[in-house]
Image (cartoon, rainbow, N blue to C red; front, side, top):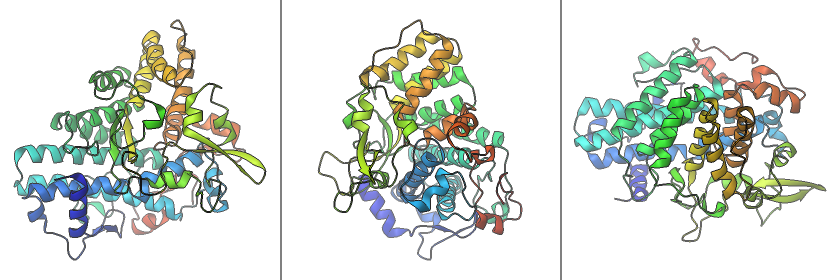
Length: 452
């Protein structure tokens, strides 16, 4: 059964779950009994497929990167109502922040339910049970990675029992990362290198190792980050690199994992691309500081950005995704979750931190040569190499899942970079506010510093 058909089957059977409390999730009236789902390979497969679909929706897979870009030094806005993100003055009552938070927890709830159902009912074929458990662990880890990097200490929930979760307190960041690492390590043993459908829309072993490499890098576990990234690169499934114009197409070679969209276009593409029929401008252009990062011959500027004039000023918008509506056959786009280029950047940074600068430069040059830039010298010093890593990461992964925002925090450069560019910057803006509605429901939750 195709992934597309599977998702439509599930949508016809299960209503979208809505969070009424932080971790309390109301069950829809016509929900299929858990016993039926977890004793039927087809229905269980559809249940986990729905979790990916939730991530690809308006929140958080499309909106959260836009918010991250504005709170960082990547995006500005022509929409006055969104200046609160550019100015890092987000109210705790903000609806978009609340929606991203809840959607991530909704996916976590679904992953927890999947893991419990597989164990409790024991009715799936052994191969299907292993596969779905691995995917559920991956999705839980992926969701927690963005929760902890955007909000810091958040509730760590691994069960569905409302009696254990409704009043869950903030967990320490180290505990959250331990859970993320444990989930990814376990998932890497459960999933195979092949994709379970004909498309790259369900996690496989390389998806898990790609995410694990990112997490190891965040933790400063340089050797382990380099080793995990090397496994993915050396697999050979995602290399050599292809033309910049084709990277974000459905099932492109560098795509390790994408989120399926039925019409072949993404919401984030709609956000960034001007609506030609009604306007010639984008509401979310790049900052001048970001555009100045490109070297003159960098093909990523000519291929992945586009200029427009608004009120007499020149701006640039992102155009990694080219579709604003249903795509022509062969030009469909799925939302990118993980791609091979990031693994070169992870290995380069880890190698530089391990004083293996020749390895780091070789990896950076893979991206630079594809971008039309001259290769870096093999004798580049370590500190200069790390500067190049940051520059290449910024020019390669912009607008993708808030990479710039998270990377600046990871390297402890967020405060200094933001302070130089934003006069009103406060160090406490490094984390978003815990949504006020969740604080009202859960007296054990504590607000992040700097918010009321």
